[in-house]
Image 1 (cartoon, rainbow, N blue to C red):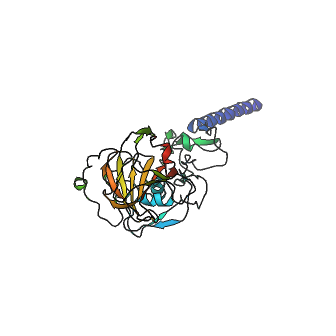
Image 2 (image 1 turned 120 degrees about the horizontal axis):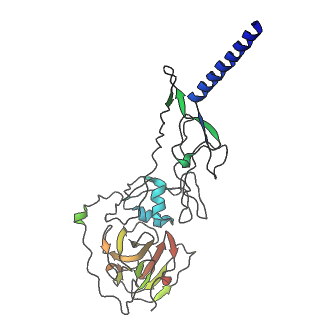
Image 3 (image 1 turned 30 degrees about the vertical axis):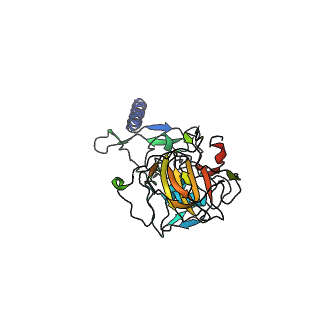
Length: 337
């Protein structure tokens, strides 16, 4: 009889142990989180999106802003695209700069380069180990078990965990390429929009003043004279030279906004730079007199300057076109004549 009672106690103990294990299993469960298919195992931080490449070779170093500079003239002087220069320095529209400010001529962590390089973005932010992934982009790097519920000590019932949100560190403002109507000049008070001069009516186009549409811009010749010098990409001042007499009209080669009017760039004399769209700028150098100011909208064929010899040994127009900051041959854009 004692033997029979001992077996009954053994069966009762096994039943109680099974019930306890089942209760523990119902209080806590796990879920397997798989990593993204392109995620390397061992990486714990979110992978940053691929940064955009620079549009031009990167000169490296820095530049100290001088009175009369604009962000566009500094980019033009150093052979970079104005959008890259603004992004590297966190300068948002309307690209306000001031004398004495030092601008980096390369993205963070980059030096001089002879080939296009990658523009550095803000470093990826580390995610606390006790937080959940915010999205699929920040998925764990390897399979792991993550608690779904925790037991309540008082009731023994599972309670859902509260998600922990990770607030990302703010990054530099995105730089827009929308054409401004006011172009800040370093050291010069920016006039209210209402005081900017309206565009003057265009002068009569040059004889045979046809146009050539390319790159979203309708181009025409900026002066009437003959071609003195053709474009060579290796020149220190890469453009074409057009002959003429002192005082001859220099005309805008296309519609646009004046983004520089001054004489601060060595080798160009009295210079006007016009922005036509996000990609194209044109430049007009060696003028005797400038007729437009920064922020002024101009139309194709409008007189913007008078021919001269400032910064040159003869009366001529130094004409350039820049595409995404890179010098290109103007003869590939101007109509045949």
